[in-house]
Length: 312
Image (tube, rainbow, N blue to C red):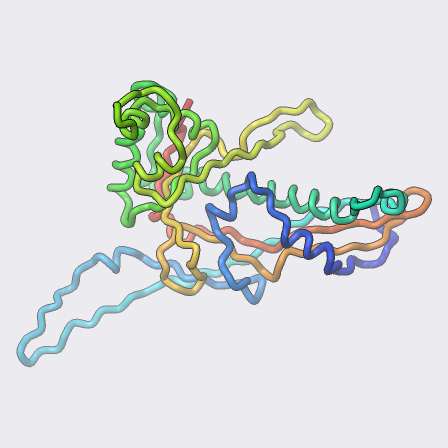
């Protein structure tokens, strides 16, 4: 529907609302952290390094009158562009005028709209991190049948240790969907390994399993998604499915340095919220826009290991 109002005008109060608002159920910012400061332009450059050059050993011997061999560390400059993501909601002026004390319909519209933008980012990051094509072929393990962690005879410890042995740098986090975490924390091999008595019954904590695998943390994706089209019967599913990934994450990584990290998120400017008057109903209304400009980057795919179909 075409608007008869003026162009959107940035609303500082609502911008503050969407900057401060975060849905605690979402994990995208923990998996692919936002680098700081924000990139200065929508188009930006980042460096991709070949880690083989760090472990390829040159001849370091120097003769009595010889010249030491010279080494050089190369990086590939890669260009990327942040994309704009935003949604709008219309609040009738009657709703604003008749709102009960303490309730701000415009702030509520900004929060709800930003939450949907965040949910879309969550799905985008999950689809990227939980895709076999994101990783080198040697860093993908597909489980099936009794090897899946939902089987009482499976050996998730062996799988994780083998994955760590295969990676060029130790991972420090595991990302896993809620269905996978439920099965992993009740897996007999896990429970018997963390129990003094060796019992295979009970429930393991996040900290206990993270310590077992020598990881900083295990991040569980628990957010729900309605997969049905608008107007159809609700069909719930998890955004993060039945997979797991081991990643090397460095929260201090930047786009133009060589800090080893699997991936990060570039952010242009800040989140924003703006408004404009629109002709709706008898007394008009306010259209609220909330959004952000970001780009998710996989900087070093070999610093990740994907366990596909971790559970049935």
